[in-house]
Image 1 (cartoon, one colour):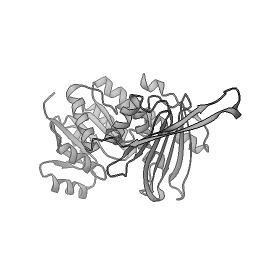
Image 2 (image 1 turned 120 degrees about the vertical axis):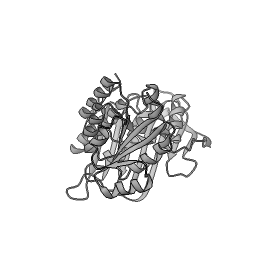
Image 3 (image 1 turned 60 degrees about the horizontal axis):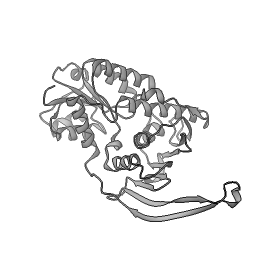
Image 4 (image 1 turned 45 degrees about the vertical axis):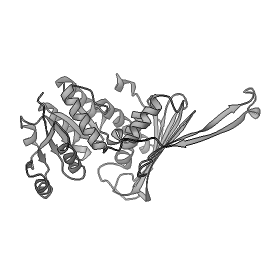
Length: 345
């Protein structure tokens, strides 16, 4: 593999400019071509990056033998076809979240990447933030003790999506974080939600994931909230975490708080609940932009043949939960069983 990885970016709407900007600043990487079907967006790209070629036909990227990797920042419904075409053209792939519109599509991409020995990585950006990596390390080192619950709120006013519901748009972030920081996988999902705009997808939803050992995870997502909230609580037997992504500096706070259960277990009436209140502290976090960290990781995986943290299987795992949640929501919260063991196999 050459020392410089040439990248083609498909989609220069909302997220594409961020991808181009970060790859332009990463050593051993350069964006050589951008594709979008809107000429006015390509004009903006050309004005900012005169040396990068632009095209309205993504086939120009697939056919270019000098391009090593493709970054896809397009609507979910297009991810599978574009990613498959890129892989079949021998390109490494970074695809925006969620990975695909179905688990069957995700499995197909994983098979194609493995068959061709190519890197397939999903843009689960929050996994690469200093805050989430710190939470992962705290849980992995057992500093929280046994994990009791994971509780997340991600709400704001808009942006209403027309092709996916609020779970696929917002909860996908928190599910990818949960899958990364927690040591186990859920065995079932229940979800409820509703649409307040006729003919449009659900704009508010509540999703619950059930785990073994009394661990439960709950997600509240909403496009129709008067304020923007990005807060996660993780409760353990020894310590608890509050993660607020809107905090400018102290995004992660660790509380030495909890309960102790004392008394005669033979009688519930003699059982005493003790409350433990200790210190709170906020650890120092790596404040590097997550997309830069992710881009560096993508290039490193290509050059060294490593498996990405957010590889195809991580993407499939999230898509399977999203599918189950959508199925449950259509049936007013009916519990839907998951089989994520096959994903890790």
